[in-house]
Image (cartoon, rainbow over all chains, first blue to last red; front, side):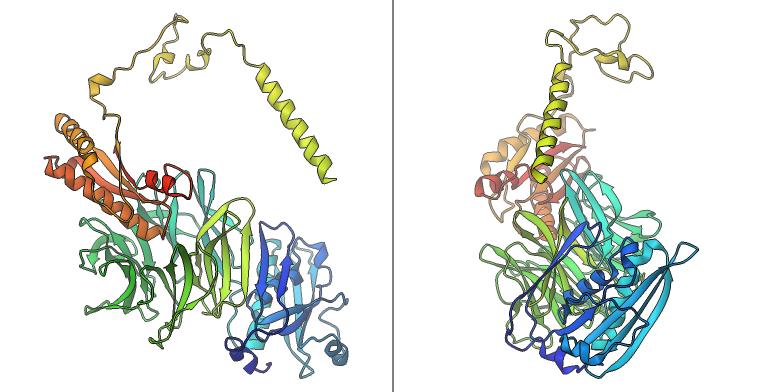
Length: 431
Length: 177
């Protein structure tokens, strides 16, 4: 494993070196991935073109490289060396190319139509092979195979779990049509889960990754549905008087917190995963909305304007005081908690700009950190390894999806060329 | 290469449009209705296939059902859900209409301008709708005839990112259910 001090230093050091900007355009791209920013220490890694990847529909080496670069701790080294997983790389040669690590592999078509994807990973610094795998996959799973290789490399070299095989849910709008889509974490391979002539907002992955809750306006009001990702079967969870919205799953996938206006004002309620009678959680005369569970399922963070403008608060679910969490700025919304519960991402209005901020919950006195310099940020959501945040923003007049490292230094733009994109939520591990 | 393709596309487009244009005969008084003649002619003048003269005009009588008056939108100030005095007549007219038609149900749809988060704006729009419903209830309209709902910032009436557009989007609409 490479020196782990590289990675913990990444958040603290000043900028050094020249700006890195890579444009990767994989074949049949629905999104273009643009990665920009300077990380303090990025491990240079060479990913050789996989033997015969050109004979498939997916540029495996390019997908792996983009995944690793987007994570912020790797820098891909250009190389055109022909090498596969059976090679015995000469370490001195690769050190000469300034690579600290090397990935090489091959793709072989099997007689049953599947592809045998093989790879090996070498630590050039230590001069040793770290491991490899071979997997037979359906042609439709070639992208997933590349993402799994990126996860393997990331885990071997950083000790952290990779999120490259996870998925994101988001909403697109083309003219007056809306679609709830599920794509790979790099924005590719998007599939439509729901097509609608009316808006869809607030998609929420169940922690088991099998269902999505969302708000649909198909009946001319906000109604919460839960839909099976695999089968498309959907059920209406909340259609009470007024608006029903902001669904959030409990960590055990058994209940949802949501915002209901049934009692005359938007308040938080708990409901079972199949609907039923809601149990009221907040009792203020103000707007309480956007609930989020802590990882232990015992506390809800949420947004309330009981103090005047909207701020982030939290309350223990067993009952107890409501505690205010955000104090900087007059308008703070859209909280997202990191999986370890230590960090809070949210949107703060600064002047006329709505910007993504990060607050260290373990250090309440610290100043929150602005993670972007754009003006229309929305809807932040942590990756399941807690190392990246996806959010929506606006660039050149279009809605776009962005990912950022927690220090705000490495950003990737997932730009849809066909539609406006918004409301991203990062899905859990496992498919 | 690219320029040639664009020119070709432009040429094709104009050809298609020209083709469309030539299909319209300017001296026809009325579009033919023959495709409605079969099947379950459910509504409208066009469904009467036998001997429909070319001069027939169907009449829709608005007075019969006392359909809602023309001004069925009220506007709000920024960050406010107060129903301003200038809109009292609109609210009163709606209340009168609902009292005269006890079986009529309407939805009050609250909206916000585009600034701010989606869920918070959904709740703000809901507050606007609820404020209008309260005004109606004070005028004697029962809860069973009205529902307050919200579209937040999802359904702007006017596109644009200036105060003129924002002012037209901060609104509540009266819609028949």
